[in-house]
Structure formats: structure tokens, C-alpha cells
Picture 1 (cartoon, rainbow, N blue to C red):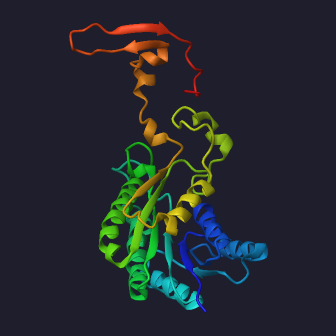
Picture 2 (picture 1 turned 90 degrees about the horizontal axis):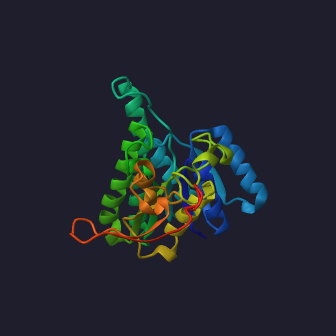
Picture 3 (picture 1 turned 180 degrees about the horizontal axis):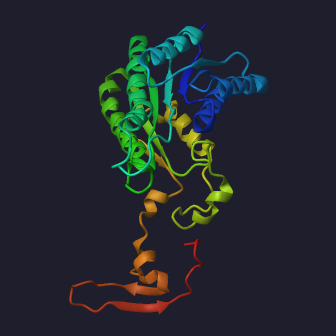
Length: 292
């Protein structure tokens, strides 16, 4: 007897772990592919003790190595009879420092774990899903660092940009097979990778991030679960940003250069260079910093 199954890389902790929990709640069999054996075994034990039974497995995987990834895909199919969902959540912070000082080996390591792994997963999971002939879903992890400079470190951000575009490219190739390929693009999420707590993030909430509460792993996992579900049956090639409105807010130049009359409490219309005079209708009380 077969059941729906998911392979989640980086599933031992953070947003990957939260995604595993979501799939287990939906009755999936799940294989966690992770390099950290100690943490992964503990995660499996915790899920098993809390009702997952024998529906969760672990396979030690270096996602940058093709043989390891192929083995993880094969293990998932062997354990549960099929592979329905791949979640490429594994990642590292990677190389950092000035571009003129970063070691080539560190740059390559970052791309291997962040981008090459997504290619490998798409390649091998896509083969199995295509062979099964019943469709499937691949969900990749991008980052808001891929969408603008100055958010994340260079190698990581550029590699994540590759992940997001690979998602679009793969969605076209696999669409005839009813295999949907999408991505989530998290903002600042309180996970072990960034090493920040909700208290650490408090100073930026309501300033660079419009929503006044910290993002947690399950906020992202909920979107992963949706994209892998039949509710998203007509969605492919999309990158869904989960960042509390940070990218929507942009650089907030109105705050920085004081060119937004609304921030000075003015209400009216700016008629630009039309020759007609701009109008100020009234002045109102400005909302406190962090609530607008």
C-alpha cells in the first residue's frame, strides 16, 4: 500500500522542520534529508513520539552531492512507494566578506549547497515524478535577498536568485507532466540559521518590516504546504514572498528624505508639472512611528 510522501531537505530544523510537521499533519510519509545527523535523529524521535508513528524517516544527505541526493529520492520511493513532493529547504549562510576578499572555495561551497542542490533535487525527483505519471510538486526556498541588493550577503543572495529563476525554468519544463514547481521567498524569520530571536527583531518591526510581529518558521511552512497541495493545482512558476510586507515597503524613501507629505500630516493633491497648483486640503495628526 502506498501513501503520499514528501522529501524535505534541511528538514531537521528551522523552516524545513516546520514543513515536515505540516506534511505529517496531512498524513504524508516524510523523509528528512539533512547533513546534521544528531539533530535529525532527535527531530525524528520527537515527531515519532508525538503521533507520526513510522511515517517519518531520516537519511543523512549532503545535498550538494548528486549520489547523496539520488539516494534520498530513492529512499523516499522505497519507504512509501512513491514521491509526491520535494521541498528544497536546505541552506547555509555561506561565504561573507568583501568581494575582493572572499575565497573562491567558499563562494563555490555556497553555490553548491544553495543552488546546485536545487538542480540536483529537481533532476532526480523530477525523473521519479515523471515516471510515476501522476504529477507532483516541487517547492524551493528562495530569499528576499535574491530580490534586492543590500539584504543578504553576496554569494547567498546571488545563489538564491538562481534558485528563483531555476524555479521558473523548471516549471515550464515539467508542466506537461503536471509537476508544479514553485518557490517561497522568506524574509527575516526567527530560525537557527539567522541566530536571531523575536526580541532581537523587535527594533525593525514596524520600520523596515510593516507587520509588527516577527516571522516564524511556520509562517513559511504554511505556504510550502499550500503550494504542495491540490488547492494550488493551477499555480506553477511562482515565487511567493513571505516577509511581513518588507519588499512591498521598499526603501521607504519618504521616511528618509522627507518627500512624503503624508508623513508631515498633510492631506491634498500634488499636481506635479501640469501648471496647476498643488492643493493642501487639511492637516491631520501623524501616526506614531512604527504604526503607519
